[in-house]
Image 1 (cartoon, helix red, strand yellow):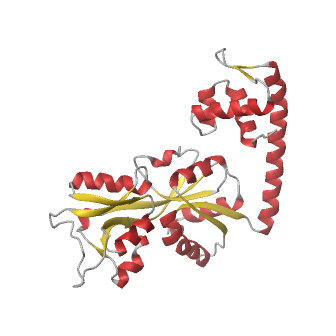
Image 2 (cartoon, helix red, strand yellow):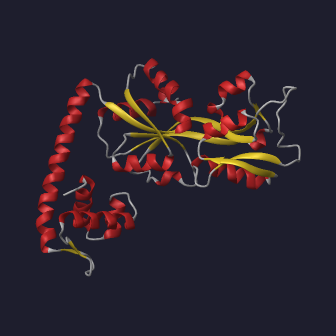
Image 3 (cartoon, one colour):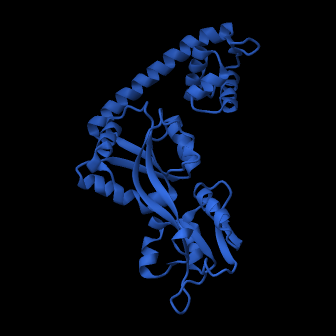
Length: 301
């Protein structure tokens, strides 16, 4: 039998509210995904737990009996996890932080160092990932914090009541390109000519703000390369292959060395806000300590 513990939590939630849609909201997943997980639980047990023909849904006799076991297992597991967290807290809790790739490279180390200088010595484990995977990890409890850029339109699909966030800093998306033999940008966004574009692939988080800007400015361009990674776009720009929009913090060194130049006026730039997200249900002492530090005026980065 191959059971996932999250299925037990799903089943307990479903039994409590007797509605697939409300239980899915409670578990922070879509209703189709939630329904698949309940069916996976039933398949693993070889039992039908839910009578789906009734509204509100009802548990079968097997479901009612299994509910007692599911509640006991989830409560016992929660108690063990709390105990282990207490032990780990005595040794120094490790915070698992999922971060956007560009923030893991260009922001994380300096931010952690500044916290240590301010007397907050955290033990951290960094996982560089894309935003979608980071959000899923936070919802599932697979990470403690998310370090990401704020998207005012999508807001990471996280309810602020359950997943509060704090402002950590600001940067901007800059259009950059390589340098010609005279020390000038290879391409000029304000020159009226079509430029080769190093673009974000469809669905890439950073690409949304860039695409909005390009539509507003009606840039004449031809896409010559696509990727979801800002660092990959930077590498292609360094080779002189086109113009890339990347976070300023990702190209600080290259701009300082003159290897890349900003190839348009400020109207070609778009602001980015850096935020830290947590789950309000998480009880780690280190998270509470960090949040209090950051909420204090002197704690903001």
